[in-house]
Length: 461
Image (cartoon, helix red, strand yellow):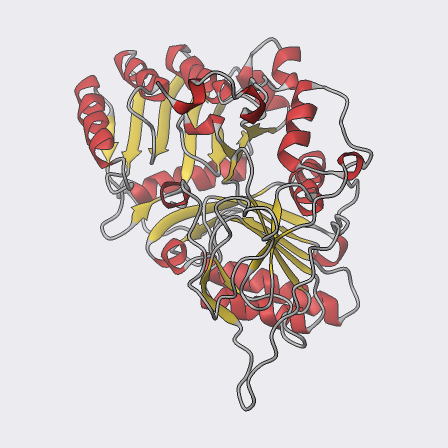
């Protein structure tokens, strides 16, 4: 019998939660194509149901006005309604292209099986570019609308996998923006071998300059700060390892740019070093759901920009993978992401751990219930339309407020004649709450960095 089914332990279980259908879809009676034509749709899984994505591809498969479907597939699972929709679309004589990444860790066998099955159904199956792993998450539907041909594009930070979509937090944007549609088509042309690297309209794509673009945007915030304009960087990632990006963040910190890094897994940048990274704060949220979404925010002198991306800030993502980042341009969607995702994550004082200058993590001191903020629990409440359990409202401006401070953990003084170590050797957050009375992990100098959470290995890719 599975441990979760043992009787007598109800108090240890999370409350049951059913992902909700986005209210715009309910109001629009499920017609996704006309809904997306009206305005972009932002989905936040698992709070909003992944079934919307399945319905989107099912509708595309059965709609006689849909001419083509193109999709990248990384982790799909063994019993996938996405794959069944693609098979059915091919049987309906639509042009279907599926890029299947055979080197997705732990999914190699399943992906090979699906590739063969899709080929038998008439799907054009490709395997990407030699030497590069395709990690971008994107689907394109080409439809004959009454006025013209139009591309409907689904960009996501997570996989086309209904199972993990219930336990991983991810964000997705559904749009028919012409320039993003052109970028999506150009990416598929590149991946299927029909073109050279194009000039992108809005997308940021690796390995053709993503690292350089992030550094450029970080340096722009540094320039804004020096000129006295509004400057701030908030990045929600799975991992921060790339040395060049970290160096740019250090320079921005030294210029006075406030930087919040919400890094769920490994982070090699040590915050809080006086004169070096004192304006950088690093936190990790370890909760019911695995924080998998990747969001990057720049204040940009008052003209804020926000991006969704499939890539972490790691050399492998910048050099050895095909990744994509897209801007979220509609003000109401950008504000929603700032308030509900970034703002609440920064305010979280129930499940957050903070990285200190000595390379150790400490869980924030847990306040009394009325002042307790859990981003995941709050987003569940918002999805259900339930009155929030908090006295604190979510921030309603572009600069989220600071959360309560963590338990003090002063950085050790550097040894005479040596500069303080800036880049930690692979510091990672704890897997779970330590035993009572031990709120701080051992110093990195005394023991190896804490291992990733139990599902870290599979989730980090």
